[in-house]
Amino acid sequence: MKIIFYLLLIMSSLAFPAMGQTKFELPVWPNGPAESNGITAKEFIQNHHSVFNISKAVITVQLPEADKANGAAVLICPGGGYIEEAIYHEGYEFADWLNEHGIAGIVLKYRLPNGHCTIPLSDAKEAMRIIRAHATEWHIDPNRVAVAGFSAGGHLASTLGTHFDLGDSTATNPLMRYSTRPDLMLLFYPVITMKLGETHLGSRENLLGKHPTEQLVEKYSNELHVTKNTPPAVLMLSDDDHTVPQSNSIHFYEALHANHVPASLYIFPSGGHGWGMNITISFWKDWRALLLNWLEERHFIPGNTQK
Image (cartoon, rainbow, N blue to C red; front, side):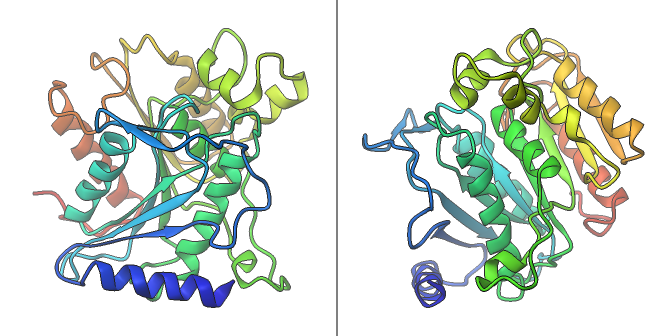
């Protein structure tokens, strides 16, 4: 497996010469995953916006120009209610913006659950292992790898931040030796809970099914799993979001605060849901400046990164 993985890495690097921004794709499971999500229909992209029928997990590694790179990296989880993935304005475009500020952006096209609720988290964990395994080659500090998530991708990101493992130093598979704990969580209008009345119903049904057990609902309600070891988080959302209730972010912030985990919560007066990198919303410059400031305060990136 390791030989195949490195050959794929070399081939991808050759396909995208190291001039300015470097961009290449890698399969998350080059030898196939342990569990299939059962999707056999052909993957397709609709309106240059969202990807459907995802049965193969892929990371798109977008590295900044060498003279801008500061060693930080973000694993990006696009949203889409666990039925599709808005991989452009909540994925590639966000990675481009991160690159402008010296941060590597790694977009995760995770497999859709399709009745297999463990699959998205399995993909996110493996992607985090891959990033840390290749930190030296990609000029990334393995102790400065955050996760970002939008909407349902925010649920996946917060699941990774509350259900991580620290790696097994005795594992025969070298990748399993790496921690899957993100160093920070960047959550945009996220789904956090699976509790009825607060969750986004579509995300809940697509992840857990129409009639999940109480145990399953509790397991994937991430506000219930915050501990003192949960990574710091920033949450950004809009007051007029009528898709994902604001209580998702508020209760997650409260859980972080109760456990003395550094966290910041920004609720903007407008914007609705799903704005991503949209520049037509009135506060698009504000949230970006606030995010950079927060990353600087957490010593994730050096100061003076804003332009």
